[in-house]
Amino acid sequence: MILQAAILLVGFLVLIKGADWLVSGASSLARKYNVSDLAIGLTIVAFGTSAPELVVNVFAAIKGHQDIAFGNVIGSNNFNLFMILGIAALISPLKVQSSTVSREIPLSFFAILLLFFLANNFFLSDNTALSRIDGLILLILFGSFLFYVYRQLKVDPEVKFETQRQYSTLKIWGLILAGLAGLIIGGRLVVDSAIKIATAWGISEKVIGLTIVAAGTSLPELATSVVAAVKKNNDIAVGNIIGSNIFNIFLILGASSLIRPLPYDRGFNGDMYFLAFGTLALFAMMFTGNRKKLDRWEAAILLGLFVLHTARLVAR
Image 1 (cartoon, rainbow, N blue to C red):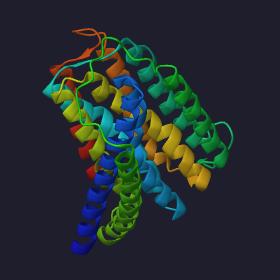
Image 2: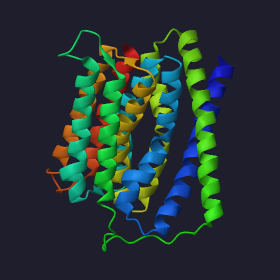
Image 3: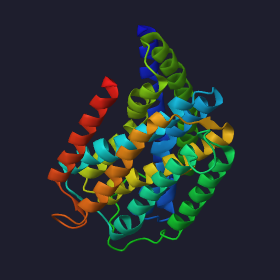
C-alpha cells in the first residue's frame, strides 16, 4: 500500500513536470507569433494543464476503467471551478473580460448539459453510456471551440505582456517533447496505482476518480492560476480555468469515448448537478457586487461549497 501511494505521488509529480515543460515550450512558441494572453489561456495553457487529465483518461479508457475516466473529468472541473478559482480570487480579486462572461462561461454550462444528456441517454435507451458517436459529437464541438478561439487571436492593445526569457526553437521543441514524455509516463503510473489503491482500500473507483485523481491532475491548473493571480494576470487565471473545463468535456471525454465506449454510472449525476450549479453561480457573481469581477467574499463561498461537497463524497 505504501509503495502504491508512493508510485501515485511520483506519477503526479511526473505529470505536473511534464505539463510544465509542455506549457513553457508551447507558450514561448505562441509568444513568438504575438498571441494574446486570453488566447494563450484558453488554448495552449488550458490544453497543457488539461494534458494530465487527457493522458489519465486515455489510459483509463484503454483499460476499461470508466469510473476513473468520468470521475477524473467531472471531479477536475469541480476542483477547477470551486477550489482553484476560489483560491486565486482570494489572493487577488479577479476581473473577468466581457467575452468570458458572455461567451465562455455559457459555453462551459452548455458543455455540462450536453454531457449530462449524452451520458444518461434519457430519450434513446436505458443503457447509459458515452458512445463513440457521442465522442465524435464532443470532438466536433471541440473543433468548433478551437475555431472560435482562433478568431480571438488578435492581440488586445490593452494587454501588456510581461518580459520573459525567449527560448531558441530547438529548446522550445525539446521542452514540448520532454513534456509529452513526462505526461505519458506519469499518466500510466497514476492510473495503475489509483486502481490498486481503490482495490486495497475497498473504495470505489468513482470516488477515487472524483477526489484523489481529479485533485492530482488539476494541480497544474492550480499552480498556473495562482501564479497568474499573484502577477495580476487575470486573463490567464480565469481563461485557464474556463478553457480547461471546456477542454475536459469536449476533448478529453470525447477522445476517451472514441477510443472505447464508456458505460456511465448515474451516481455521477449529483456531481454533474453540483458542477452545473457552480457554473451558473459563477455567471451570477459577475453581476453582483463589482460587476465582471470575482471578489474575495464570492471566492470564500466557492471554497466553502467545495469543502461541503468533498465531505459528502468522502462520507458516502
